[in-house]
Length: 112
Image 1: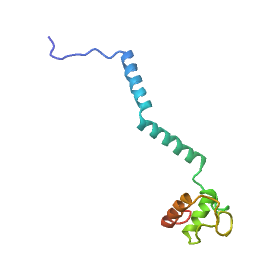
Image 2: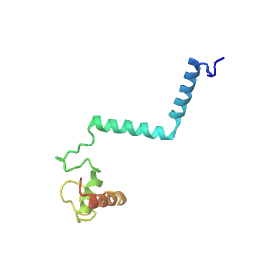
Image 3: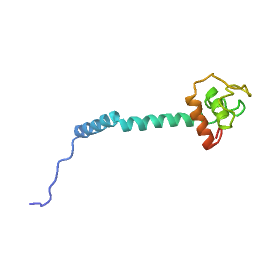
Image 4: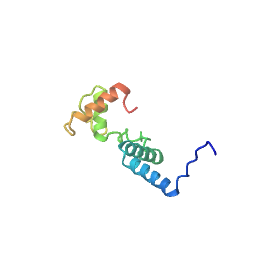
């Protein structure tokens, strides 16, 4: 008699069941949902070149009016200049987000 123990091979149906179970779990897992969504967004950013900013319009695509107000805050002009040029103080936008942008611009540099 042989001392080795042999196991019968896993049937093809059993393999598909295990694969289907794994895929169902991976598909409904929060971690995988976030990872796949991040991958799709990152791919679109790379393919569409949305990370390239147009400097000809004064970086208007970075936050639009709020980005311009944030740049004015970071450069010491206060809550002003939402449009092209120096337009003076404004009440055009609510203050929270422009001040957040202004703080980021102050720490890392304006439009960097």
